[in-house]
Image 1 (spheres, rainbow, N blue to C red):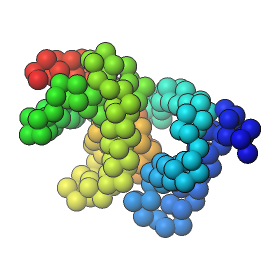
Image 2: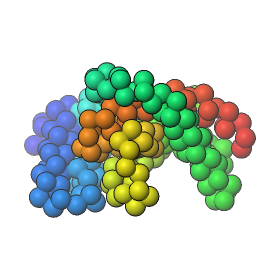
Image 3: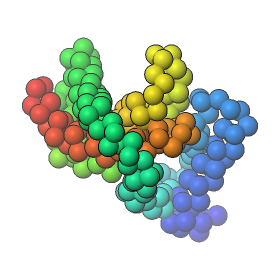
Image 4: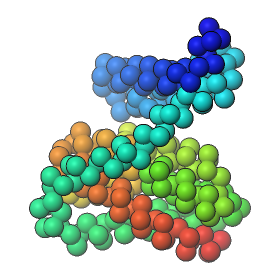
Length: 229
């Protein structure tokens, strides 16, 4: 057993097993709260805590999975290419939607920092919460934030967005597929885009576009907001 747990394949195996178990549970329960990534995280924590296996043993192999984040994000350009005509037709609305989404995210973090008296390090750590991990880690480190906490905030944002996106958009009566995709992608990055793709091809394409553009906009906006507090 120790040979397996000391192997780099241990982390990969546990990660994939718990995730696919989460997918199976989601398919059976049909409830948004049973998010596969959330289930995987909980199961891994319980397993490591119960077995006494050091996190470092798990992380050595699990880090291999994280290397796929960037290429997986780039692959999201494919559905965007298929919806190029819709993008051109709604270019002005798309740009305004992404810009407003990025500014709203930054303003919310600023508001929370003022209300809860965050210090500067925690404040800048949370500023990249709504962009993809591949960009958020580097931005957080550049601003002096705590990269691991940034990753956690990005994951929580994505999971929460994935869980509530469809219901919330119905609640506020947003029906346009382009608007849905822009809203989901700008606020909940890749995890949100997974939900957007379930809603439709146009929603998925617009959400994919939002990930890239929101990442670039946040790289510009976040350092400016970082100087405020």
